[in-house]
Length: 343
Image (cartoon, rainbow, N blue to C red; front, side, top):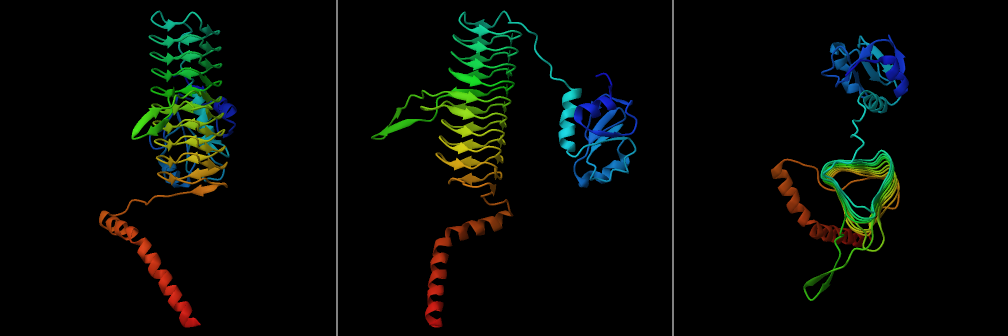
């Protein structure tokens, strides 16, 4: 790529620059590998010992860190990770598809196609679909009947939207995502399962990002709703009628059973599982691999599960776990005996 002046980067990322603003860089690199012509960043003190040998032209850092060992230009920001993100966005602008409908795409005559829409090879656009301005549909995508994609939505290759899915402005959906498949709804009758038709939809907010191979089921009656600014990692399962509040973040392999409501600005660690019909308050953090079986009514950090330990010790602890009930009874009996003696 062509060089970008450090002054331009500082202006775009909101950094205060210390050094020659006319120098240029061609790439962003990790601090361990950065060379002349590249810019790096540091946001933790544990990386400070690397600065003496760092050959990068420039460094993004917090003013709270002593980076005097670094010999290049320093760009200071209170949130260097944010400045790094803005720098990468600036230096590596997203490559957009050509504005065209590929000859192999199948587009219903009743679909409404807005200005500057791109539809790649072998995509299928069903009846009643509305694609607003600037929407990009990747190769092999299937857009079911009556879906609505608002301005500047981008679907990567091989995304599937069942009928009646709505996606808000600027949202990005990665490959393999399935939105609007039937929720897991069945009525039992004498050991036979009878399918309950899932007649709700899926509504995705604006500025949402959904990672590869994630699935979000349609509602049974009401819609499954993902709020604005939510970020969802790869390989996540979200059940029918789930509601996720604005600006929450879900890490990979999370599973959320039907009708659970997760509040705004929540952070869900990888591998966490939620039982159905729960209510999770705003600003809750669930650490990785936790099992959430009850509602959480106030903000805070919550955990469950047993951290990894040496196998023999884990087996002993597992046996003791099965003995907790008897141990609790023994403790109560001892307490009662002690109380009788005290009397």
